[in-house]
Amino acid sequence: MTNQQVIFENNRVYSDLALDAHSLAVEQTGGEVQGVSVQEEQLENALITRIEVMNEQGAKAIGKPIGKYITIESDGLKGQNRMVHDQLSEIFAGELASLANLENIRPHPNLEPTIFIVGLGNWNATPDALGPQVLNHLMVTRHLYQEAPPELRKGLRPVCALSPGVLGLTGVQTAEIIKGVVEMVQPNLIIAIDALSARSTARLANTIQISNTGIAPGSGLGKNRMAINQETMNIPVIAIGVPTVVHAITIVNDAMEELLKGNIFSPAERERFRHIDEAEKKRTIGNILGPYMGSLVVSPKGVDELILDLGRIIAGGINVALHPDITPDNLSLYL
Image 1 (cartoon, one colour):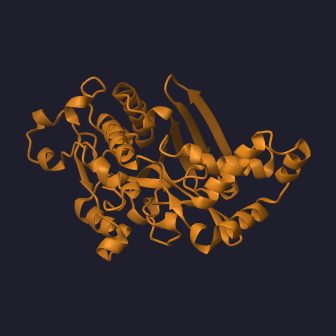
Image 2 (cartoon, rainbow, N blue to C red):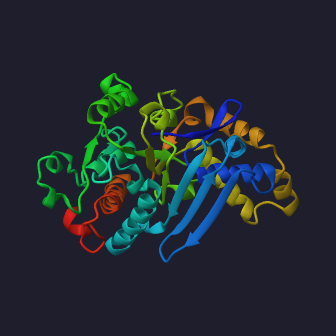
C-alpha cells in the first residue's frame, strides 16, 4: 500500500491520489497550480480526470513526481451491476493503453513487447489484497507465447505476472524481488497494481488511478522502501491503484465538514472554523483520537466483495489493453 503524505506536525493526512494532492494544493494556493495541467471528461458512468505534472515547480506544488496521472471515478465500482463493471473495464482499458503506448516500447519492429504484471500487497489482509486478486483473472501468456508458432501469436502479447508478497511475509523488499525478476525475464514494461489510501472517505473504492511514475510499496504505512519506477528498474513502470483505506483522522475531519454544512452551527461559528489553520485542526483531531486511534486505518464495509469486483474490473481492463484479440465483447471469456 502506497501513499502521498502531507504532514501536519505529528499528524499526517495520507493520500496516494494525484487528484487529492492537486485539490489540496488548490486549497492552499487559492488558485491554479503552476506546472500542472488538469483535464476532465464526463462519461455516462465515469468521470475521467487527467493530470499532468509538467515540471519541477508542479511536482513540488502537489508533492508528486513529474508524469501523467489518470483518475477514473465511478460509484459503479462499488455497485453490483456487472454490465456497468464491464463498461468500466473498457474505459479503464482505453486509458491504460493510451498511457502504456505499447507500440513505442517494442524491442524490435517485428517483436511484441513483454509486459510484467506485479500484484503488490498482502494477500492475508483483504484491504491490501487488490494486487494479488487482479492476478487471479489475468491472461498470462509468456510461457505459451515463446513456444507457439508465429501464426498462433497474433492477437496476443507475452505477459507474465508475479505477486511478491510484502516484506513482513518474505523478509525481502518487494522492489528487490521485482528487480531480480526483471534482470532475468527482461520485460519491456512493468505494470504494478496496489491498494491505495485516500484523503477523503468519498474516494473509497470508487476511484482507479493510473500513472506512469511508479510506486513505493509500504509507504502507505509510513515505511521508507525502495521505489518501483523507471529509475530503479530501468524500464517504464505504470502504477494502478484503488483507495481501499482511509485514516481515522480523515474520517473525523470529513464528519466535521459535514456538520458545518448543516444548521448546528451559526454562520459566524462556521466562518470561524473555516479559518482555523489546517495544521492546528489536524493536531486537535489527533489529540482527541489519541495515540492509538489517531493511527487507525479503516476500510469500508463489505471490503471482501469490493476487492473481488475491483480485481475483476482491473484485470479485465488490463487483458483488453494488452491483447489485441481480447475485446470488450468477448472479455467475459477470459475472466
